[in-house]
Amino acid sequence: MKNFTDINSIGNWRKAVEDALEVKRNRFAFKHLGTDRTMLMIFFNSSLRTRLSTQKAAMNLGMNTMVLDVNQGAWKLETERGVIMDGDKPEHLLEAIPVMGCYCDVIGVRSFASLTDRDADYSEVILNQFIRYSGRPVVSLESATRHPLQSFADLITIEEYKTKERPKVVLTWAPHPRPLPQAVANSFTEWMKATDYEFVITHPEGYELAPEFTAGVTVEYDREKAFAGADFVYAKNWSAYNQPNYGKVLSTDRSWTVDERIMGLTDNARFMHCLPVRRGMIVTDDVIESPQSIVIPEAANREISAQTVLKKILEELPA
Ligand code: CP
Image 1: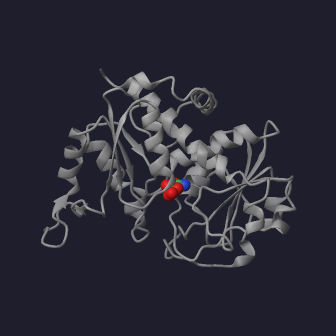
Image 2: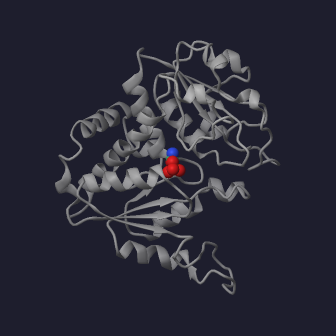
């Protein structure tokens, strides 16, 4: 694997899950792969799970790790070409990226959507600059449009907890006070489409995701119908994709909060969320604390998805 940016990076999803479960059974068996290799993780945005799980995954593989928070202690970076750099950004990303590439063997990048310029966000300017100019394999730690390490962990978790060959999985929008990117929802949709699960998205009108992700997917605006008989409920907020509302919060309607009543319509569904989650907005305390909630094992599988991806990258790195 050269780069890990989306579902296409992973190949056959069943084989990828098998590989992940093998890593999970014996996560310290591959330490030799990372000896004298360095992983650099660049964060343009905050993180708890991605930072810790990816660093742990790299350490399990024997790698050295370095973490740079671009907005804390590093030079502020200009990302646009053709600008006169007379403002508060003393370094350009186009020099910073190859310099960072000099110090490591693999680069992980977290760079969220701006939510102001849809075309720029959906062309993945920053992630693609890292791929083009770093000279190193690049792992997305969540980009403007996708969060593939999260989706891979979600898939592993569903495979571990499913009790039917083809479970019904529902992705439900839920309210949040601030505008959030569509990346987790896009990515989860992309990975669920690759499986043979029954997959349904439900959201209020106006929250349609990009057609490039939802083509062929059932979108059910009637939330109760969507939840009926579900085996997994994946809650997530996202801001509007469609223009002229791109990046806006259109609703904070708490009737979309996942509560015990709506979960009662499911087939005793497991509750999932990528975390961090706002209780009382996305989900009630009762649901997230219930035995059906698998948010913690889901987060634990972030280490496994990251290690599986890094292992594949290391196996293909030139000596
Ligand atoms: N789910 C997830 O990516 O969490 P962090 O933002 O804390 O990394």
